[in-house]
Each structure stands twice: as C-alpha cells, then as structure tokens.
Length: 174
Image 1: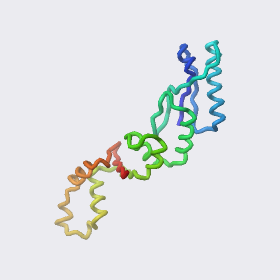
Image 2: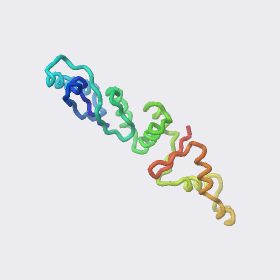
Image 3: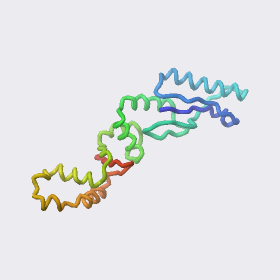
Image 4: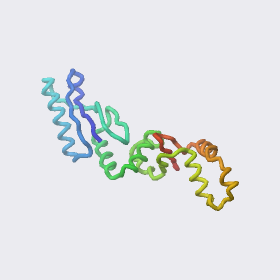
C-alpha cells in the first residue's frame, strides 16, 4: 500500500507539498515523515506550523482509501495485509468492494467465508455443485447427459450468494 500524504494548509495556499509513503512502516518513522511534510509546507508558505494532512492519491490493490483516512490506521491495515497471501487479499477485497462487510477488520474475520471459483461460469459452479452431491459417473448416461447445468447455474445465482467478477465466481457463505 502506498499513499501520497499532502500538507492541507499548503495545498489550500496553492502548493502541493507531499510525499509518497509505502506502508507498512515503523510508526515513529511515519510520524517523522508527516512532521517533515508539514514542516516543508510551513516553510514554503512562510507561515506558522502546519498541522493537517490529507491523502491526495494512493495505490492499494485490496481496498479504497479516502482523502481523510487516518494514515496510522492505514499503517495497521497494511501490516495486517502483509500477513495475507494474494488469494486471501482477493477474498478480503471482494468483501469490501461488495459492501458485505463494513471495514477491513470485519473482512479479516469473514474472508474464510468466501470461495473463489477462478476462471469459472455459473454453469461450471452448477456442475461442481451437482458432482459434490452425486457421483456423476455412477448415473446412467441418459440422466447424466440430460442435466441442464446452465439452468441450475442460473437458479443458483438467484440466491444472492454468488457474484461474478473478472471471470471468477465468488461464493459468499456468510
């Protein structure tokens, strides 16, 4: 996660004073970086101490970041995210993106309730669903070949726990 921390007072005076910061980082280093940005802003504006910052840009693959999000809270989130693999981050991002959770902490608690059917269609999910209950190889061909997986997939999609995104099917069990 990277955020561009900007001095708000300098910005309001027509100066873009800020710096890209990679998170997570040591909290004391983050405090020092913010103090440095504010000091430069006060110097450029030739006025008193500056106190407020905001985030003017960010790069984060798993969540959206707002202008006035707390950089220290974001630093904590980045630390927690560092402990997750790409697949787990994909599940967390799905929960946040679809409003199925309220915040990152809740997404951490619930990401295991997400199943990702990668590069799949609802028809593929339906096949796996039926195959999970019945050994399709044991069914007579007249029955096995008559199963309408497309229709079953459509029916499954109506229950609200399947989401299609970027060629994957997300199933939320929560």
